[in-house]
Length: 457
Image (cartoon, rainbow, N blue to C red; front, side, top):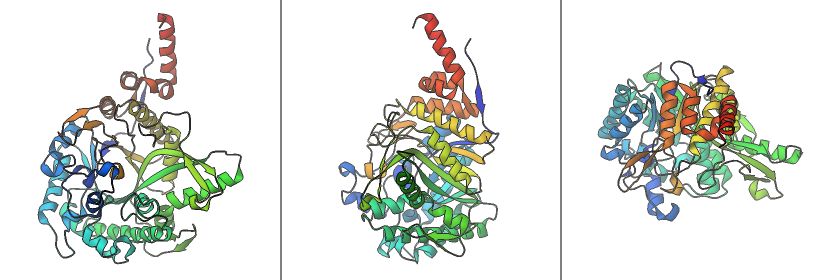
């Protein structure tokens, strides 16, 4: 007889997907990413174009698609450039549109999670110095206040920023995001400091409007482990890289201290305690090898060998790294929402394994009584993936940007089964992610192997 088991999640656990304004709305307003695309800075010269058609009305079909799949939450962001097209001008129609999205989501049984800043800035803002300008703090607080006034009675969960560490690193160190600066570490940490202060100012502004709102921040956690654990220099460099990339906002919002480019911190007023939850984005984990090269801060990163990888070799399936990421997020001392987790896989060959094994690790953390309240898969459908344009495919649904046709992948059905069961079942894993069965349900996997042997397969 087949072994049947069920890893059950707490009542009221949120199962959703995540999206971002610039990536799905299309027809972008005057923001720095539109200018970046028009300058030919995206892979193969691609542009977002009509996106996934959300600003043309297709959002409604996708909201219904998510609800029909049994999801009970949806994460989306608003576009600052649409809402405030000039320093002295606000667009009431854009605010009304986002309010309709939030109201429709709630009517469909989808808890709306709204992100205020997901990588894009109005062009007028960047022309004033962007996040390097201290005036950015109050500009962002005013934006948060205006959006909160329009949506605060409909939206309970807010994120001020999405992955500010990625924004700063890719824009000022790697140079693959606008403004395209390479190796300007000092500027990156100035940007992070102003974003931390802007988060705190937005937190206060939103809570003055609606004291019972839940306001957090979404952080990208990149797992890092030494390639050779026995090598002290490798352990030291790994810890240093982890601190610089992952820990800035832990120091800022838990300890009330701002970190500089050397890793040292200084006290800063008004930051500590401005966090109702932390959003965790986890995709993969690196192995770090010590190298005698200061340009790489003496550490070279690579994906671990011998595990399945994404289609383009940028994400390795390391579910234990997800468990370690959750342990890190627990250090903030507030509830945790997994706000992004997923893999680039147009063929859907690896995603079912990735999804099942990562949900299993989340369940392991929950049974240790860690305060995890929800999970948002990245993404609902394929969308414009920043510097890679349309050449990366993270969607549970495939999306053709030319025809706007959506097609569910097998992993969409797996995720629907997870949401319906409020957990992971052997039946769902057998049906949609058979390769994960011995990893997630060892007894069921062993029973299946014995059955195959008995039948001569």
